[in-house]
Length: 449
Image: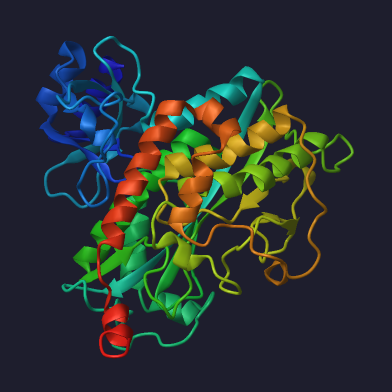
């Protein structure tokens, strides 16, 4: 591995390396090193980071009562870069590379609670069965005007015409061309970073865009989504606007999702096991869907991790409120796109754009895996509008966390420590949020109650 990375860096004249560690929220943390020092660290194991990097909250704090997992004295972890993730970092004056690293204890054991390791654990379960997941994420995001005071709402930015959008422009080509310069730079940057993005469209929200990734290996796609967010935010700043992956950045606009298309191949033959030889839905396909139906509502915080995430999931807003499944039915939480048998897949529409891609993909795959192993049977396929059916997804992060902590089947596979740490981080963030008095409360309660 050292030789491969060293040759790659030398051939491209790289001067600096950003060594990236995704934390529990999918926030990129790590270190920036001169290329020479980075290469030296690969052999002398001096590339390290405090273990607390995996328990930091989105507000920069740390949860209490998990010292038995991450001790107060905060010992260092050893970072081992994954050679397959190294790529050129676009937009830097100094030739720079990105590389994503896994964390290990001094004993050589991987850090089990690390989000990237959680996804690896799930993929190992599939591998043991001779199965190989294929994933294709769709990531939505908004462009918004710079917001220097958090007390003010976000607003769409003006485009090339000098005007901001005020109405839905779903799939609008003229609307898309309003941000042509930004979009072209995103494409160029993704090409330089070797991110396999397919198409970009204008979504239903004002200045809301969506990118589809080319289907492929689950871990590689999670890595790409992580870096895509970084690149898009940097490109937007260069053009004087913000790019946000918040699930619901504006109250009068649709939310942003990260839909996950998933299918399973026979690892030996490459055949899609979701289809029978005569092209019909296989029993494994139906059991995979059944696992998603039964278990996704119980581990919802893994795909809806923030207070804001639950503002997205409202009726008739292109976001699900339950986990019905149906063919080409976008009102359902689980949609089965029309496709050839070899491409049969299910689209999980629950994850928000704000979710950690490693944990969102891991959550979706582990639910399907348990369904397949336990031969679960799905409910009847939905015909018609799923918004007319009862809401089965939690309405708030608080309610979702309570269900999450009691999901024994998934906890057994992902580990007690991960569940405890993830819950503690989200509970601490929830407490911080609930300590804030909102403008709505001042507006409607101050002089009335």
